[in-house]
Image (tube, rainbow, N blue to C red; front, top):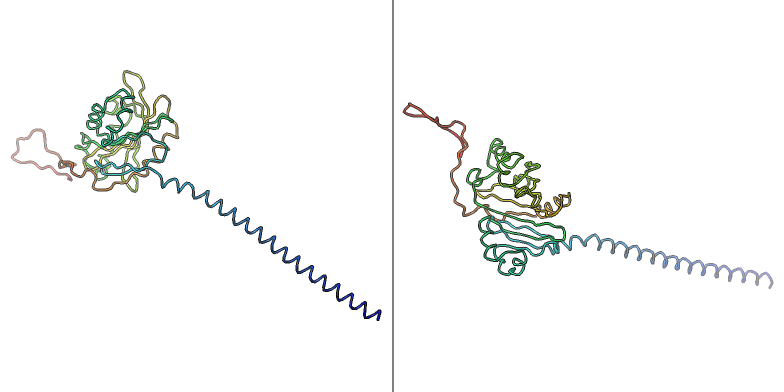
Amino acid sequence: RGCAAAILLSLRNSHANWCWRENYAKMQMTIKGGVNVRKLLLIFILTFCLLLPGMAMAEDQQVALPAIPAVVLLPEGVYNPVLTPDNLKDNGPFILSRGGTVEEWEAEFKTKGILMKAYDDKNQRLLVVTGLQDEDGQRFGDIDLQTADTRAAYRAIYSKGGAYEALGYRVDSAEWKNFKQVGRFLMLKYSYRQGGEVIHRGFARRTVKNGLSIMVDMQVFGRTLKAGDNTALNKVFDTLVFTGNVGEGVAMPVFLNESSTAPKETNKASFTMSGMT
């Protein structure tokens, strides 16, 4: 009997140990499962945070520039107000606060080809986009269709010591860059003076497309330029998209890049001139 009892007790202990081990394993699985859930929750939160910048981009303000025609995107919450030729009357109080009238600003927008003025007063910046039929448009036509020598002549106008300085601009640098989406633009760093006093400084992008001079100009007031100003310009400029034939409707002259020109004086019955239109 004693032997049988010992065997029975041993069996019961073995069963108890087996049950305890099974429950412990289940408990471990529950804990491990809980850890996995926390990991998944952490991954979800991190993914959501990474998506936030993309979600913010969806709220950027699109501004149409039909005179070019083109569109740009302005980062949400940065520029206010954003003036265009079509909404000047709606911003009459703001224009009056800047010492002007709607009629005066309408005339200025038309004369200077201003298509957008976007104000970032917090950072003392004004972003101006212009598209104007001017002498450059008549002379150079389309920069992307010109020879290297002709592009160099255009760059010389806006370089240090060039004709642009006669208008009050002192250019620190002027370099070409060929952008994949919009072609060649001259990248400028400058200061603008009147009566010897600096009115503003700026970074700008300038070109000629199909008879139209186009400029995207980040003007900075009351301080020196910072790298962040150029970054702010690039953030908008990189969104520039031409939405049709640039300069569509502009009366275009015929351009001739001469390789052999006509003589100033001749006593011959004929002469030859050649070039590319």
